[in-house]
Length: 241
Image (tube, rainbow, N blue to C red):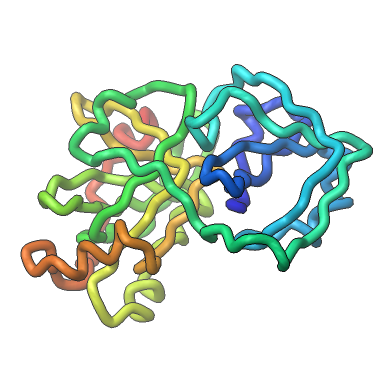
């Protein structure tokens, strides 16, 4: 199960988007819980746990910025839905991602149907800065990630997401940092495809999965720990990102 805190500007204010459930079949499905029921489950639902869920609805959705691509159907919680932790069932992988190739981000530019995940080596971390946008003052940080062919992409972390990667993260990792970045949206800026954070974005560092291990196993992809650089963006640039 992957917890999501979805941008409230993207969804019905009466519905709170929460987990992606990884089913025993290996597929994922997105679930929603009405806000009025959130407090009933806030202490129960935890990422990585296995649950049995009963008495829910399955409904079609055309919602934008979906966290998974596998289906247009979602689980909808009702007042009668029950969920209990299950430690007896067949083990299910804790994480499941749908990685999009970094060198092919252009085909997702400015599309709103679903969010994407990427994996790569973190190479540059720019300093966090304050800037003015059309919605007021906020903070941002740019980081740069490379795939196994050293194709880079710039990732813009807005607001609280700017703290997902910082000096402490680097200090805590003695080796190169292979990052998994989830639930990002692709934008086209000055002809370049870039990834931007959403309220649902999460960052995992050196996660023990095959897609990250391959970077450490191939000598030609090994790089030094990421470099820190002063932020290079301008206020004008940040306003339109």
